[in-house]
Length: 480
Image 1 (cartoon, rainbow, N blue to C red):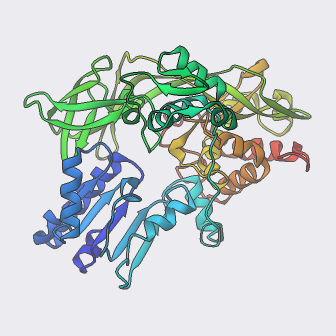
Image 2 (tube, rainbow, N blue to C red):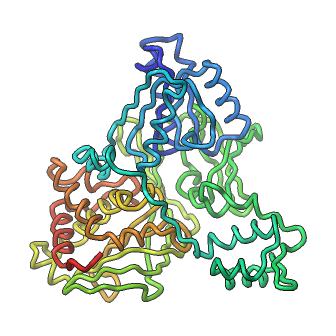
Image 3 (spheres, one colour):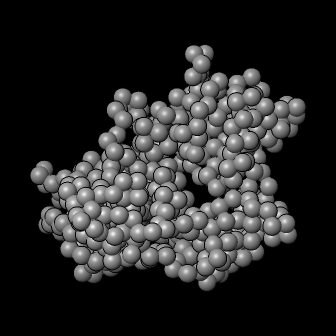
């Protein structure tokens, strides 16, 4: 980005996380200090969680040309009118073909020439696309994946609709929402009179519905010494991003979190640059809560099942900018429980041993296969890697080695179901991506995950390929 700015190109760089937006802007400014000091103040970061007035100021500075470069999350992908950009840099595939073209289309909107650069990340899906560019450039925009009868989504939408215009029985029946509507009546949020549903007095539901899909409210970030409101973070992300001791980046400034109060919805921070970054570590447990759909193929079973996922942040690593780990700090954070849907497969231990995976290698082989499968699910479902999660265990349901990939939204969002319906394509691409990576024993381009709560240990790259090839060999032609 810095080099493009020096060449006179107003540039937008899309990154995949809030932390990356802050770090990319800092890196570009540092580079400009060395090669073009007069331009070092023309770079900023942009992401969700900024205050509305801060976002508006950045929009204006970009439109007026005061900003020559902006590092942003997908918060600038839609909904903001931006013209005049000369170049767009995508730091990694954004997760869907639709997002790729939307982000790329931010440049050249005044009819001038434009430059779009995709920099592949160390990620299984990016690795696959580098080796199969037609899967990106020649592929149509994905079909939207949605579960319209998910009560966690349908309930708030029904409440909003009834607030705007009362709903009659026929409408509610046509949406398959009678049970959800009656539960809203039982909760005192809706009232039913003469075959129509009305909002209860004082109910104002719209503010509680996040158009970007976040569920569970926000934690505000406040500077302790001044009372200044810096921004916010979702309740679900707060244990990992705003725990006590976490390093929090905001518009190029570094803060350390003093306290996090879920009841009051507030985290206090103080300005400090400790010279290290923090990375939360969490423990995940998963329980199958229903039968769902099961397909059995000899020693392999494939399923789409309801599950409850429990995440518990147990501590964090303090890591220097050089990458050296200083220490691990234990935390006692509340558990987060998520009822959702997962695609899963089980394999008998005997089949794994016959395929050449000794018992001691089974956990690492399943773990590596899980990581790679999470990275490749966006190939068949219109989701981002951050929309899904996974878990593997050598002793899952019925004591069998198991791999789960689940939707990261209450009730499910349809991503796991798409993986279940297209399992052969998904798992086949996953195996190909691992095999195409030239590393000897596993790396971020194939089986390592930046989200892994276990520090990517254990991982067995060769074993993951054997696991996936075994599953694919057992799936019949009539299977998904």
